[in-house]
Image (cartoon, rainbow, N blue to C red):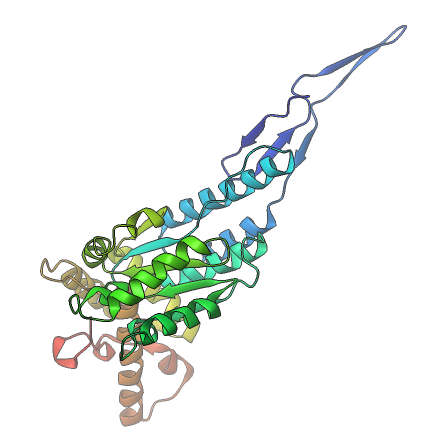
Length: 319
């Protein structure tokens, strides 16, 4: 019996057990048996979608996560009925500025892959150049192998991965890259490697090893947040901390974000991280104001005024 699978707008897969109505004949009456649909709940996907729904923006990333889930799910179904289901590597590259949610998404992917039994542990190991590169010949390869061993059954997330390629031919970073490439191929079913960093630097990084680019089937761009999205992030942070902005403070923050995101020379704006720094500095500024005025009623304790916002370059709010 043919069982067509349809993907609805909400991502739920329905299996049509019979795509035609069935008719039965009696002596006096006839009745029709309606189409029966068996709904597949896809709880793993639902859990991740709920968590990603809490994130501001990132629509493209949410679509890609659903696409990866669909591919893994269909591959398992093919395998169950004896069809070929090639086990592809899930190594990824995340490109974008800081504060765009790369580490958060990596954690969610680890959880999804664990629930789908793609990974046996589902943990996330965060690393940087110092965790891989050694001080003498042979030390780097061993450090890198040890790190990969810790990541087995989970995800190895290397931020600012392009730094491994800095320092020239004699730098030990190249040894770390070569070791990663070998284990990506030999043990690609046992762990997932995610390399992250600025877009331009990561593009250059891929040129360092001939076999590097082909080993990343998923290259994902994390775009900078719009001003509207940054304000949503600020609002979420404030509500979590039980603060609120006055209208004047909100206007001041919006104008400031328009200014800093509009700077053509700004190459490394830290997005959500920048907003968090502003909020935290402003909360400390409000505390100093309240201490000086000796006003501690509920409304005063919850309100951030325009005068409280720390936004100028002189305050050294880092990008």
